[in-house]
Amino acid sequence: MEDEKIIALLEGYVAGSLSEEDAAAFFQWYSHAGLEEFHRVFSQCNLPPGSLPGAADMPEDFRIRLEEAIQAHEANEQQDDGEHARAIPLFRRYRLGWAAAILLMISTGGYLLYHRTPSGTGDTANHHPSSDVAPGTTRAVLTLADGKQVTIDSARTGQLAIQGKMSVQNNHGAITYDSNAQTAIQKNVKAPLYNTLATNRGEQSPPLTLSDGTKVWLNALSSIRFPVAFTGDSRDVEITGEAFFEVAKNAALPFHVRTTQMDVVVLGTQFNINAYSDEPDIRTTLLEGSVKIGSLILEPGQQARMHTTVSLVKDPDITQAMAWKNGLFDFNHADLQTVLRQLARWYDIDVKFEGNISPRTFHGKITRDLNLSQVIQLLQDVGIKFRIEGKILVVTP
Image 1 (cartoon, rainbow, N blue to C red):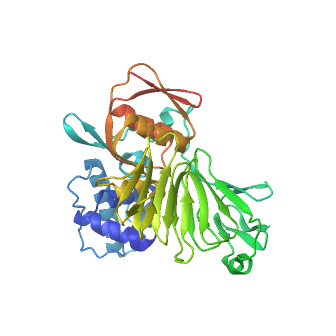
Image 2: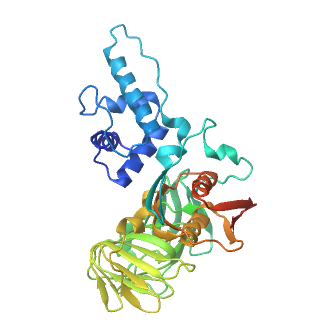
Image 3: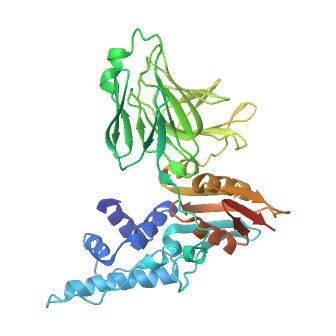
């Protein structure tokens, strides 16, 4: 995270003016920061001496530790002999605590703000060393026109392949199709070449830039099939799973995103499509521009749902639809099955229900950088019972 963003978060947190999402981002940065980094950033903040955090809902233990870090910084600044004050440890030991997991559960009594109480033993993951699963990673597999497969991650850089006259580049995980060659090969192409980018469970794709400049991100267990160069009178791609698009504007060449049940027509926009086969419906969420689904035209901030027919969702939660791309699970009135479907894709596990499980509904956010054991601990602490059998998470009454 850039210093400017951290400074804004810290100043906002002291003022008590952060949104839930910004507070979670601040928690996450602070839990990973060392004392030196904290001092460096805090010294750039526009805060008067003696500033103490003012967020009303801050956990008391977190408040104390943050105050100690601020006081240590100010003590260091005041020392004339060049000696540093005693280092006050930051919140690294309680990484799960306030940074990585803020979970709200809706119960019969209303909203319950859940903060994981830190224990003296450190990370919850240490309690499940034999069965822990790391969070997903940024990686995908690119299948070329001849069937050759290339694994895409941030470790490689340079040219991946030549497809027709198109150069495919990997810049530390960002995949780019050379748009300079697009106009040269757009006409008189009888058999366009197709590539497919796909993620497995436990993976999220790096950004893919198509030949027209459109950018695409894939969530776990998703794919996009696209031509190396767009030909004809439209730009057509096919997806499975979930994808976010930033479509390059070109009124002369409308952009089509096709799923097994739906065709979304785009002129130039930002939108998300959730088309997992195990979800009850397909959802298209529009951030900017306009899209057309059948006879329905979406405006920014609207969401369409495709079940047997297409309908407009009343009061859609746009931040929830975008949470995966922003590194979060966002459970807004989500039942346990919905929560576990998302966890299964991200942690590459299977979920099995045993017996009669009482209905539970969740509302809140969890960062996607937790180990599975940490997430399980959160759910266990609000009354959900599990056991792990290899790669199967068994939910019990």
